[in-house]
Picture 1 (cartoon, one colour):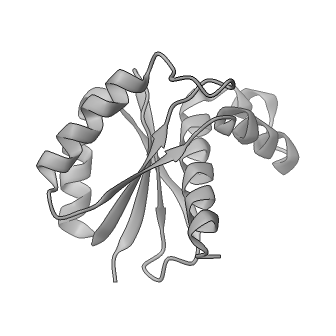
Picture 2 (picture 1 turned 90 degrees about the vertical axis):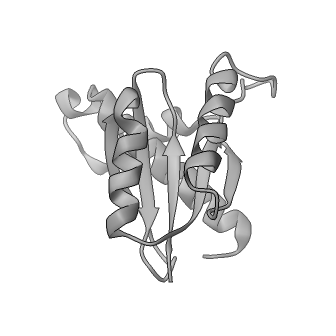
Length: 139
């Protein structure tokens, strides 16, 4: 059984989250610098079985496409060419950064840690994956 890996694609950094092999729990994996993302994924897939990617679909709060959408589409195209046997789902990522900050506040993480944008990206990727799992009835 393979994992599901979610991607919160950003210009500078990209947050990643992954399910356990049984696809019961979504958890943060890491945040990588976006220029190193494809190399990281190639290395990760050599060690772990991934059966699906879930990529955050950047939309504005009014539902219109965000400025980042063309970059995300380019990334998805590269991802599908690099890993042609792995399906890719897009999942609405609106409000994930807000939810990530709220989760950090509720968890009691200190102010300095809450300013860590890499952690916010990783938590956002986890929220995207959690939403996808709930939407699919995995939970």
